[in-house]
Length: 93
Image (tube, rainbow, N blue to C red; front, side, top):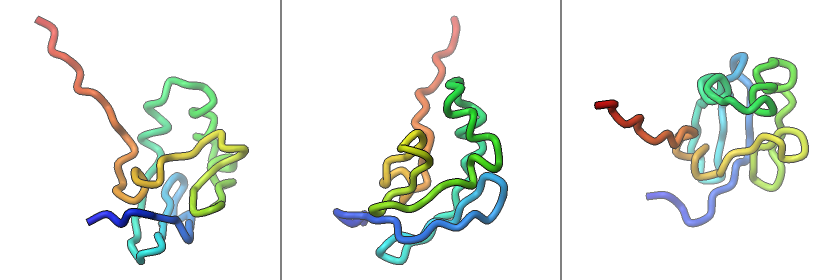
């Protein structure tokens, strides 16, 4: 069961694009952000494939953010480790 209010309490970089996230209910997730960033076509998001820029994240008010909210994710997606919400590609007849 997902708590009604979720806050991120700690984020630690454990690889080039992997973070270990700790939530206020004790749940931990290890998330690899590289697939999400690599699939993005938006140049502002792809810019975070630069390791130094990616490493400049912070936890603020229970959320994980980069810059002035230039890159951020819904807390529930981080909690569930479901960054991608891709629609299936329709088959071509």
